[in-house]
Length: 232
Ligand SMILES: N[C@@H](CCC(=O)N[C@@H](CS)C(=O)NCC(=O)O)C(=O)O
Image (cartoon, rainbow, N blue to C red; front, side, top):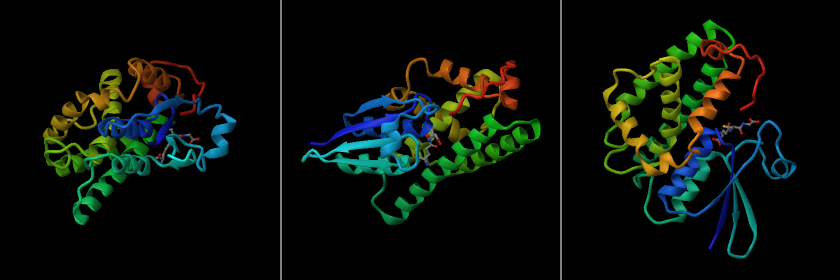
């Protein structure tokens, strides 16, 4: 039996992917949240990238292994427990991996949106994200991304949609409006227990506070003049 520790950050969307997949696969793990603004020495010593998530795996012999990169951690969790969240057929499998990567690119654009220092940068990211969500909408099979079964692409996009919920609630900013497949899929993901349990109950307030204090154009739209930057 392996013992897993997911080294995490309370707001990190990449951590959420790993937590969602572990829960979907019924894999027990301990979650340890760290402060990314003051990374602990033990974390820096074992993490090649200094980023969360990081998975510490203690194997049957008591040896420790370190895994990093959320997509890799998600695939590992998929492979160590019964049932498959990636299709078996190579072409479909490659297609799903590509969309996981697209979800990562979308998260990068979202970070660009809330971090943009000025209106022009912000508007550029709004356009980029609307175009991305148009692409996603056209690719969703429904009811889940790939059809009848929940999969790794679903886990990768759930944290993306959590940001959309925040932008809509706080700024009335609609980045994926009028896209029917996507909005159906999004609602289904929001009610999935694995998705709900991937963040703390006060996540929405914590995210709002982070966005307000970011010192960016978006922070200004939230009506906050605080200029201190809180690192992700
Ligand atoms: N490609 C990485 C991205 C992870 C990532 O960017 N994590 C952020 C937090 S959400 C982080 O650790 N940032 C701290 C830093 O870059 O110093 C993955 O998929 O795991």
